[in-house]
Image (cartoon, rainbow, N blue to C red; front, side, top):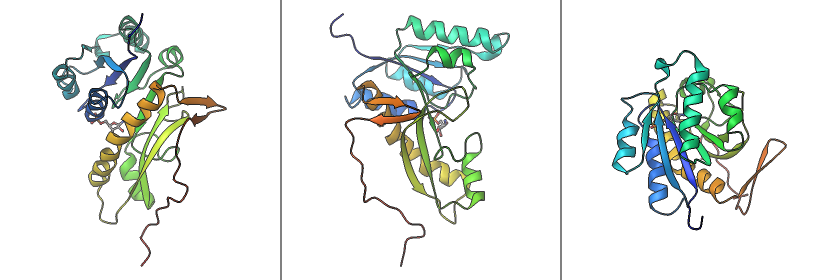
Length: 220
Ligand code: GRF
């Protein structure tokens, strides 16, 4: 079929600000694709409103209405496959996915996580970064594998952790960068520029600022 565009599915549970960044990235032409379907496991997720306002098809697949993870994930797979989705983006989707789902979409399932993986996988990552006294944190877009927050890394953004930061301050600073990073990582995938070899993602073509360095605190 000529002219058929690359189809993306997005899974959300909440505010959907990363979904909005993807919507905007598609709309501006930065990401050469369309968002074919947005699924939320929560009916009141604000991200559903964002999707509807952008004219994107939405579905609510509420995990609580299924007996166990497997029927829930089968329903997600059915909806995504029916929509002809070629890439699944997790964007604040707060359910751990089992090998059933992960294997079905292996290599075409990606997630954004608000830390510099492999540091601070899991939950409460901003508070944990502050408690650990790290000078920098950030966000990571990675392929999803069976182990949570552990798949091959596509792209990362770094932000400083300030002495005055509360978890919410750091979360906000990271989220601002998430909104730049996620569309960029999705673009790389859609354009066929990501290749995984021995768990390392190679990006082509790509520029690397070899001279880039951040020192915290900044030297006098
Ligand atoms: C983001 O911090 C993302 O990294 C994490 O969940 C949050 C989702 O925020 N996985 P939003 O729903 O995209 O606003």
